[in-house]
Amino acid sequence: MSPPDPEVDLSNHPVVSEEEWLAARKELLKKEKEFTHLRDRIAAERRALPWVKVTKDYRFEGPDGPLGFDDLFQGKSQLIIQHFMFSPGDTEGCVGCSHSADHVDAARQHFQQKDIAFAAVSLAPYVEFAPFKKRMGWHFLWVSSAGSSFNYDYGVSFTPEQTATGKTPYNYGTSPYPFSELPGVSVFYQNEAGEVFHTYSTYARGLDPLLGSYQFVDLTPMGRNESGDGRDWLRYHDEYDNDTETVGCCGASK
Image (cartoon, rainbow, N blue to C red):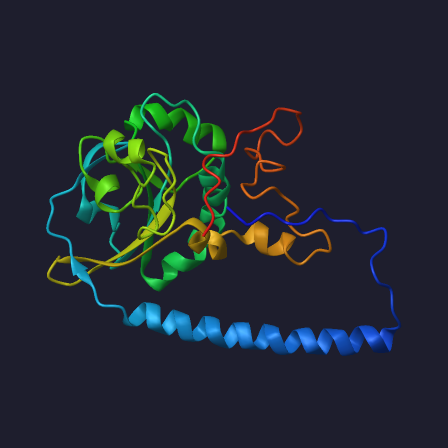
């Protein structure tokens, strides 16, 4: 989901004195500080967005049977949902969504202390993705939205008529990829009266900040060094030791 990098050639990279390096580093630090302050301002604007009340009675299926929207909050007032690409009939999830899901359990043990619950939601029936979840070793709640309009209402699943036009309304109409499913994250709040509100959704490269492994890679000289969809190197975490090519799920970029 990142833009293509130019081919990295480290053989002729500039090498300078410590003093010259320090001067260049301080110049970059100015931009990094600007970015940090801008990120803080954007986060504040995100929190200030108006909300939309959820009025539909969405139903889900989890490991113990049917669930209502209330159940996904798991006793918390705030809920983050990963729209996980796993279509009916699939036996493996999208590799990009799987990469994102690999970050959740480690972070969840911390962010759930801030009154935040997490759930992944997929269009396939629960019985179809349960074996894949077990294989991946994930412990977060993962439920099916099969039979409801949830995925379509929150902009991650598209009808055949929409995909046939090549103009799916993905990412608020800015990224019209001709796929039946695409990734995203949505956030909800439940008040003491039990009312649920949609507060935020993000798609495509808006998901980048959640990918801690990418943030590590971005610190290095070679960076991501990929064609734009991650398929150059990204694998399921249990397949890095073999030579199987894992096909990227969508190649969406912002």
